[in-house]
Image 1 (cartoon, rainbow, N blue to C red):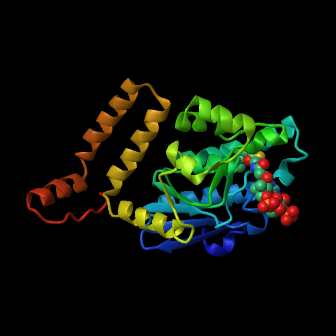
Image 2 (cartoon, rainbow, N blue to C red):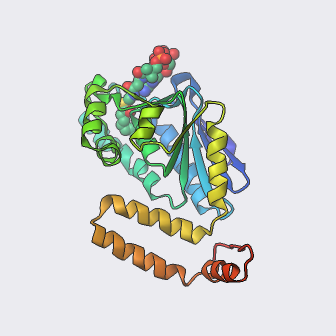
Image 3 (cartoon, protein in one colour):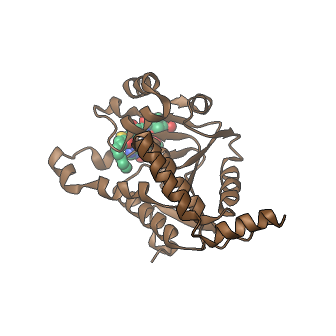
Length: 261
Ligand code: CO8
């Protein structure tokens, strides 16, 4: 399992220690149907288990990272059919991936697409990126974290504006509000993300993993709990061979060789 041929709506590839997942439903601007999300979660979890993958890049195409959940698939749902389908149990597993996920986005990043981007750890955006939560225009609201994660990221008044008008913001505006890390020309966004992913892939993996976990703790917990968690992770890393190697290499003025142990 996990071979390319298993997937209908995504593509998986490798560039050295970077796993690359490409959303691939170009004819509908990568609208996220249930099967696509299932495949995405399976690919993410496979890469998370694979020691030779250190970081993950998640991308779409130039025109769309993802224009949201698949509206055709949702149009005839009822409250009870949605509840029974329980699509968010699989969705929530995206937030449990241990390895850093770098989103390389361009074009439309709307609705569930924006919520997916906000589940990533670092975001590189092309100049043509448009980010928004247009659910209100369909008579609904975000259901995969859009009201919560967006508010924590951009603050109350900007979140209100985006969620209540449904109008997308530009890449530059997203940069100002801290929704994306960097805006680059459209020819470069994927390469830029892969370069960044390779840089992080060269770092000691246990430290990478515990830093990601600790930062995510800050979003959801009081400071005192986050600090206690950080302290324990910090102590834990002193049990790793990479701590011994990293500090010894510094003292010996040579480059460290990290093994992930
Ligand atoms: N779902 C299904 N099909 C879509 C979607 C979508 N979200 N977005 C675009 N498409 C399809 C279009 O129907 C069209 O198909 P066809 O060629 O068969 O007519 C094709 O993609 C190309 O789209 P357009 O012709 O509309 O292209 P335009 O360039 O004219 O417009 C827009 C681009 C502005 C992005 C427009 O397509 C649009 O408004 N799309 C819908 C955006 C939207 O409302 N997204 C929010 C969806 S609701 C949601 O995400 C709730 C999240 C809940 C959690 C989900 C977890 C997965």
